[in-house]
Amino acid sequence: MSQPIASSTTASPFQGAIGVFDSGVGGLSVLRAIRAALPHEHLVYVADSGHAPYGDQSEAHITQRTLTVGNWLAEQGVKGITIACNTATVVAAKTLREQTHLPVVAIEPAIKPAVALTRSGVVGVLATRQTVQSAAVAKLVELYGADKRILLQGCPGLVEQVERADLHSAETESLVRQFITPLLEQGADTLVLGCTHYPFLRDTIQRVAGEVVTLLDPAEAVARELVRRLTDNGSLTTQTELGSVRFFTSGDMAQVQHAVTHLWGDSAQVEPLASNR
Image (tube, rainbow, N blue to C red; front, side, top):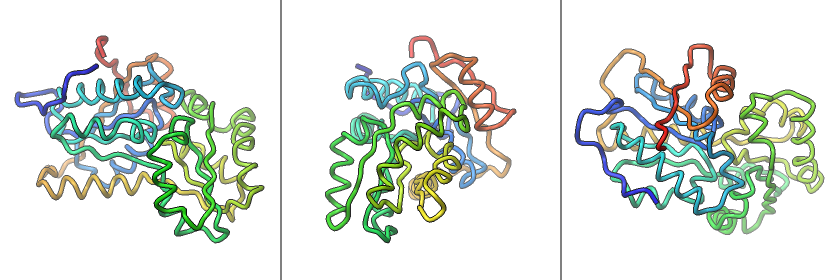
């Protein structure tokens, strides 16, 4: 298990940057929202693709990876950490918060706003198996879904399609149709994108679900919460030039570079995470 996390007190490579991480490239959907909300901040993104997908791992492994990546970001001198992974949030966000003095902002499935929006009273939640089976999601359903039907749908295979940047193939659409059709047949008119990889499949999901179905992605809400937290503690940057964005991965460099280039842009250059991470 990783040692407790402490804020860096010496000059570090990314002093004052914001750290963002996910099990892979899906968290780029959250990074994009953060970039739009805080264009002058320096950002450091970690795709822990060497240990993905988190949704198929044990809780102990997910916690260990969350603390390992959190440790690394803290050692680099970041001023805050964003968990851009629903699975890591529901399994390990509490532990990470207990082990660092840094502000930790985490994403979670948007069940509360979905309940407020549904017209049919039926909400579908698309997520990894670990997320839909978690106590944290069960608590969200209990808190907000008392008079609604909340249908939890694990979606094995979708993360891997996004990791390969395979967003529009017949195989990807077939998987999406397999997971969504049972929800639609039960009357779901609102679908929660409960994994940060899934917004990259939004066009396919919307086409399969139909335009009358509302899709919810909480990335912008995460960015707003990050702005609030950094404003409250007075740590927003005062610089006026555009901030930098650095990308790191624990996974296969060529595969992650291909995916990041496709999902973020040609200017993105992926660097290897330290081998002991």
